[in-house]
Amino acid sequence: MTASKQPIGKPKKVVEKKMKPITALRLQRMIGLVVALFLLSVAIFLSLMIGAKPLSFGFVWEALFSSANSYDYTVVHESRIPRTIIALAVGPAFGLAGAVIQALTRNPLADPGILGVNAGAAFAVALAVGVFSITSMSIYIWFALAGALTTTVAIYFIGGGAGKKSPSPEQITLAGVAMGAALGGITTSLSLMNSRAFAGMLNWRVGSLARKGLEDLWPIIPFLLVGILIALAIAPALNPIAYGDDRAASLGVNLKMIRILGLISVTLLAGGATAIAGPIVFLGLMVPHCVRWFIGPDQPWIFLYSLVIAPLILLLSDIIGRVVISPAEVPVGIITGFVGAPILIILMRRRKVSSL
Image (tube, rainbow, N blue to C red; front, side, top):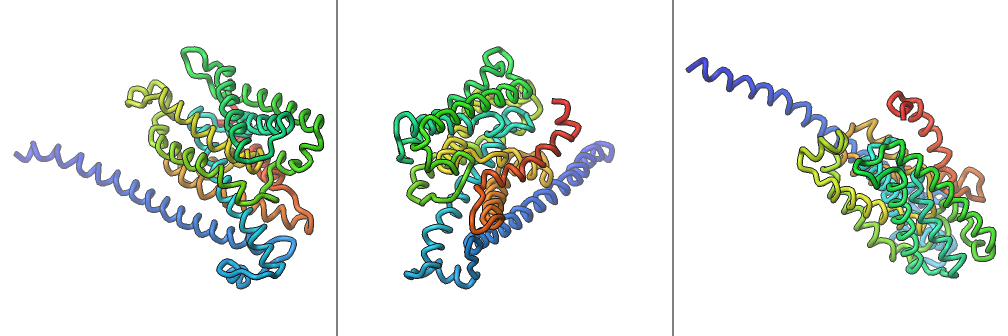
């Protein structure tokens, strides 16, 4: 009897030892998420306070719950609140789109900007404005989504997705860079051919949150929400994909369905965010990597953190853009480029990425 009980007890001890670090890691991730949410709330108030004319915390707090006819109240309600809310909408979209692309392609250098998805959406919007003279956000959002979807599918097939095997990360990256460069050149040509139509979109072309109203945001919100929900739904299935298609298929993952849903999610997120804020670069690249450095390669947690860290970085970049050459402003897309370039260099210096 004693001999039969002993083998049963050993696995129990092993399970208990394994459960402790998992519980501790989960607690650490939850605490980190709470801290990130706190930092995001601080960034929100800083976004409302800092600008060409700094405002006190007390005044901003009072302005949130009242209205007046003074200039400062107008600045808060008509300028800083809309651009802050827009950052809270497009930031998670860009960050999560980058996380989805990196997980689907197993490519650490993938993001909507590098893979040309943003360029495709921007090209379609430029086509709508320059050729068809469309200026309504509710109309050219469809052009942005169509451009993002077409570009994503084209990159996948150009990179070798038409064969039996999935394209490699190197093939997708090269195809994306080539497609993005081509579409970027065409977009620039369209803007030069019809400079009058694009006069009001100069900041948009490099990525900007300024001069946007909430009325521009509302048509896009449903697309962003659906994209976020789809991404969160497929997040658990993306962990097995990290070990390869064969391993994921053996674990019961429907690779075709996950890729289709991921494609739809990226299209909605990147296309919708680009339509209102322009092609903000590097945000989708740096955010998932910054998150992975702290919490490890668990896709559901990476997605949750990306939803918080991306708007945090975007708001801080926007604040820097307001004060660096005050009273003028630097578009936030340029600031994220300055911040993201060193991140890309660090990634290229890492051993795993240098072999791509």
